[in-house]
Length: 167
Image 1 (cartoon, rainbow, N blue to C red):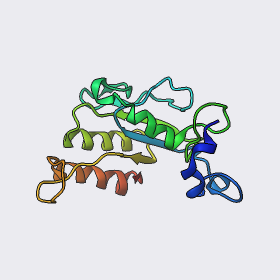
Image 2: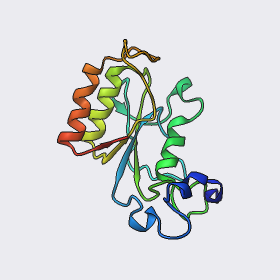
Image 3: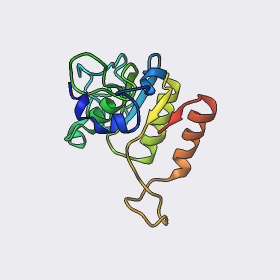
Image 4: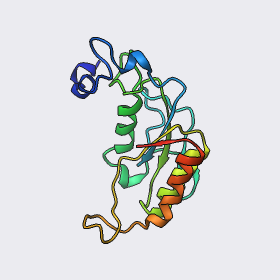
């Protein structure tokens, strides 16, 4: 029901009048990891067949984690990616027939980023969505603190070995 308010969906030609991205594909058979604050595992507008993982303990549950998820950023990102089509609820995602594989940050460290990318790649992710930022010291931007020598091998593995697309 909120598609008419989703201005960007017609701007990127995902859906709407005429030939759109949805005429080419809707995400069926695609698993998208949302590497973020976790996802509401019971959200009625999302297809979450695997509960994912929590990165501080590497235990199952990609559910939202404590104060870091106050605004529900991971669930919102999952909706933009894969809000189900034509179900009379919420929004339509860019790939509304895709499955979400939630991977929940807790401490937001470089080690968690690498572990999350590696876990997602090893557990069936076709796409890994990472809606966050962090900069290395000396880049002139902030926040800083992550060591990319820790993260880069995980990126290489996900892309070169597992064939994932990282966004």
